[in-house]
Length: 51
Figure (tube, rainbow, N blue to C red):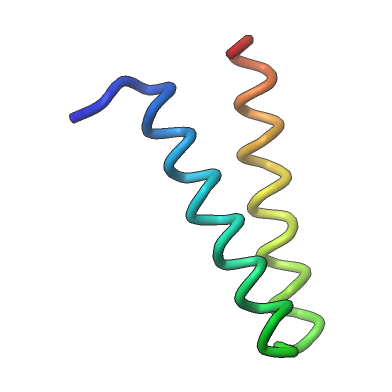
């Protein structure tokens, strides 16, 4: 198991991929918004941790 920082980075990368895929596939507004909010929260957590 990786460090908390590595796990958070992996979660951010996964959320970014999900957002990109939803944009590329012209998913509905709700899905795109949900993916965007998820990514924003993870980035906010990363910044708050001081990484």
